[in-house]
Image (cartoon, rainbow, N blue to C red):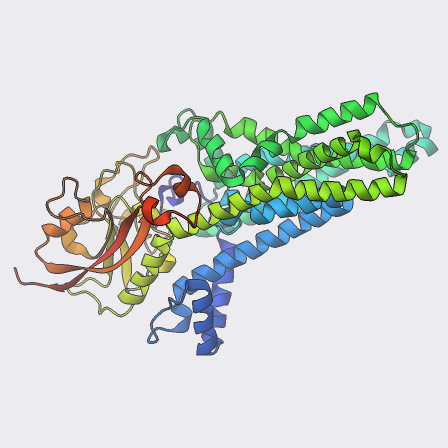
Length: 583
């Protein structure tokens, strides 16, 4: 389905972001064609809970399995970038900070759904970790390149603020580098010229890398849009003008507070207050400097503290940008999820170190014994502090899976069933899978076989809906053959809607006990009751949490006790029009 951002007159999305995953999908399709049937069935059971395409279908067209494999690939790439980041933290900052960061990253509910999502914000999160890992190791050129890829190729230019500190630090390091100082010492006459040349070299390299990346992106977009276009500039300009993002909903500041509490709970507060805690430690150390410490140890500690600040500053810059915006979405916080875990680990390490330093029981011990006791204390106290947070986060992740997995289950069932249904009569080559108010829970076109197409029934939703791509894609020729038009003000376009007579499948959320005599009958069921072209029947039903009727604690967390009496579910139903009847 084509959204208005891909329309040629707007061109807000870059195809360069989609191209890598399209190549991966084709590779997996090629592989599935050549794997034994038993292996493909095992993959389906592992990734799709046993759901698979019917045996009469080509293995490569098991699109739900391809979808799951692509999501797994995204999670793997995110994990590899996270591993690189954690290794850099361990080697360059502190093994303790790396250990607690890894613990929080592994258990946080936010990472549970962010790392496998194919969204620009998730991609930026992954690329920031790659950039930060190189920055911590002193590979500033590579760190800048990762930032350029995030800004120019991910289709989300707003993330440039996350890499401001990366660029500034690269310039400062070049200006103050050892090689520059040596040149200044040997040739006093070029004392001012050498640092300027080093900074200019960094800027020139950055410009060359940015030009090359932008050229590749624009070449890809030229192929798909049929004209020279810069989606990064278009989306930046659209969101910068007054009222652009407000068209899609306005939320109060508490929306982000609740999201951080749900996804990181206690660790979110620690992460957000990490920089003030670190600043307090640095101020105290400056006032009470230990004269017996070696100068080399002081240098290492100062460098580690500097890297901590570098890793935390982008989080505060990002929050300063997104918090005032009236339109708020959870995905806007994805890029700072690693920084929250990193900050919480730093805050906890500083708190435990300060408490160990002030404990009289440790002060009376010898230096070697005291070090061992302090290490054991930090580990045990850290576990006691973070384990409750981890348990709550894991419970939250389980709740997300158990309460809201129904759409994926239903569309897998739809794919398997619709793949075996004969083509419709009346000259149409596809069955319409229709939905009303539940359109936004449609997971992906990977869950529709070639013989099915998504359709929309009029509902209470009053915004703009997508429509099918034409054979011309996003090129200007598509405007001549497209049945509907797009707009950039989220205005409802009535040409998107179908009649119930055109539908073969209907998807609707139904409350238990709903009947023809109920006060509030879902819209799609009302349409089905008036359809005289076929006989509608319930094909499949899956449970979906009724958030309004379920107590908050059971809605937020997966609690193994008391679920029968407290957790209330709605029915996420798939209906099928089994046959046509004569009028």
